[in-house]
Image: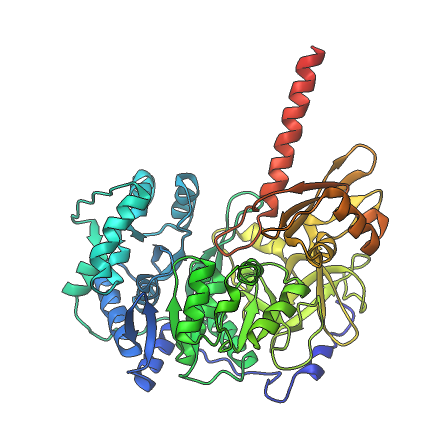
Length: 572
């Protein structure tokens, strides 16, 4: 780089946020111990009527760590956790770290092929899974390095009489009965905890050099890669988050933990942040709008990190007005762009703050966020977090772009990964000098606020024009009858690509293609107006609520392939 980085954004920081933080060179698990010592009787977890104090959480995590070591787990070994949000997932996570091992977060929705790849790639030695997932794990076990499988059940963390009723309702709804024969390599989670004893474990982990986590990317291009995140990476990002949310009171907040812990965003802003700040986690294993509304009102939730689709779903719930959501202080939205209209509506309903953040798995994950209590700019991902350098890589030269110039967003900071697991070539390709290339196209304004115009690979080029789906989606979301919208590029023989919009309308409302087309022509340049509209009852999403744009792209490719095949059959 020839130009000097200016860091204009630091002038926008309020006095409460330091531009330069000293990040503790400590392990993640040391914060659980510290919180248990400072707030032993504070509630740490709530799960359908059952609660754990921080002292109980720490003691169970240490006990589980000892049991893992008894199973042969050593420092640096990988332990896979394939669980929805439950108390067991928190105990497993910190227990693994206390044992000196590396957590491999595994999506419970993974099918055999995805599971086999992740287990063989990571070399995981132990798998902790839900009983309903046990058959899936066993189908791939012989092709992996797994030596032990620890099975847990939702009912194990429910109070009486829910723990008795739940297995009956589960069997009825899932229509499956799982028989597990426990032996020397198949273990019961609850039995391990019962037969173990609390014994402090000496922490021999180097927080800077040693890994805490292998977090696999979504695998949108090829096979999923394991992102290597150290304790220092994750502690730094959690500390940055805490500094940004400076009005949170230690030991007094309640977090709705519905974002999946197996996703790095939920893991950092729901679990690790709560532990560091002594907050109570009100845990939900899946997102259900009515249940979320009930929990916010009942427990007086103060922080609710989520995804735009979650907030959209709540705002469109028919019983929204029946619930008091005024306890909410702050929500950081991540995983996909936050429509401005959704932000305004949510703040109006709750009286709290909802701001858009930005990050990626490779950065633990957060790099940018709008100020929660301070200046923000609509449509912006906000300012870089403390000690995080961000710049736009010019498309004209390998140097920093000028304010307003669109290019690839690049990042460097203490939260940036050590690299991809066993993939040195792909690691090298992801960095430009010491800068992490995000693959996102964006720009910075004169004051240091950053904007994402779209994923580099999602940009549509029609008749030579660069078209960014997010801009069109923002316009679509402002239509009173649109609940959800996503835009992709599809091949066009004349324009090269053309714009297609997928729309979900709000319940009880009707919308025609003609009406939407007229609306878009009034709000967009003609070359950006979608040429094709498809109305759907729902859009494909991840468990975090992120719309799977690539699934829609693949569906379009399949349709074209089938159309060509039919055409070929007719001509032949």
